[in-house]
Length: 296
Length: 296
Image 1 (tube, helix red, strand yellow):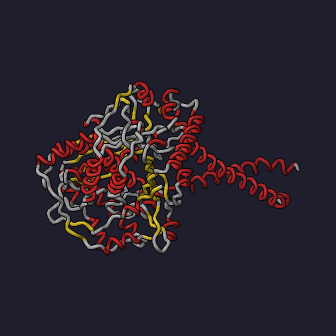
Image 2: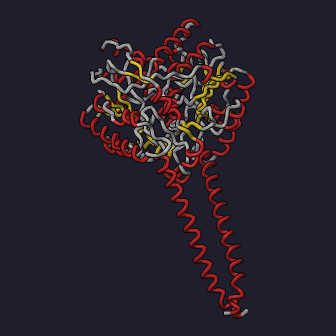
């Protein structure tokens, strides 16, 4: 035992060296792994002009095994056709640009939505319009879920308001605490019950080929957001109002409620209808042209 | 030495146990760390209906030290004003929704852009229109850089085509290889020289308060993408064409060339002009309404 105890310091030293080596190694591995991911992410992404890529993690193994790039072949098989749109005169083009700006500049996010019914064909048309957006390799990675069922609308409201309560309690005490009055304003969301339509926009983070292989949806979030921009323009064009909401942490529950597949993730929730006669909006101003535009 | 060697198996056993313990522990730590991150990400994000949050990493420490949430106070100080937009009749609203859909449905991504000059006021108006988009807590996190200088346009083309070559060589041999014909099509981008305007859209990943503190820009990428959707609608409304491009890996070089600050990141590059008289587009079809809409 005397010899044992006298040897102990040696073993301790050995242990320290080995342990240090192990830890250092595991760190190195993590670093190189994340580096690989990045460079792979670059490699596997082709340039396609319309190709809007996103941060969706697609590690190279997943890519090799599960993904196929059929859309490319499809595009190669397409023949090209002449594109000769109507060209407006210099005065027409200027007038049209001013008119459209004036119309869009009247758009506001409105939380006071009337239960007054809206023709269903109009909702179909604004969604068709959103569907004209460009998308990565023309993957059209969007699903528009239109909710009119009162029970489902109420369940959506319950999910959103419950999450609100959690967010509220979690945030108490940190920099993000708003004054109670403002929080109450956001706390109760009657419009989720009252609006004749709730449009929930899902991004398809990947598609599925007929042969079951995954189809990469580059930049699906940006593509679907662009479609939402066109959707907002289409709603404003017909005098309907909405408020652009991203229900914080509600995505999985709402996806389950609406029985959307796992490759779809909630991007936005838009309550849609006419504004109430007593609707109000905060008196916000927009930046001047010189604050958003730079000339080179 | 006999005793030492006879003890060795014991030390080996001890070592194995300790090493196993260390590895298991370090893994646990990593897991819990990533979990914390997520919940923090939730905590520091307030619900604001217009608040479009994004994946921009804002760790809580950074948040505590560098960020201030002044926009909230600003909003609280705002008084609310009545919002009473024009309401169209049932026939008007239906007709307007059909007309706007027909107009937007004619939009295509066009790579054949004419050098024919376009009135500058029109470009200003479409950018003003894009600036009417909703944004996280009304942060308006966008910068539209309009390039008309021939030298700068050519430098942009050189940067984009050079990156193209790198992308091309990196991709050789993997699933993403396109047939040469198609690659050549994308290889040379004359339109970057020829188009009368190049609009480069930057997202501001954070703002800066007068006191130098950072201003959080939630969901800046989604907000700016929505603005781009409205921009595309505004261009289509006046008969101008573009192609939605995301210059792969060119962001930093183009940001440097255009001398944009570090808090701005390139989101899109849009060459804008009239189409050439012999412009063609691939004969793509769009999904049917039933393939993009779900009714609940």
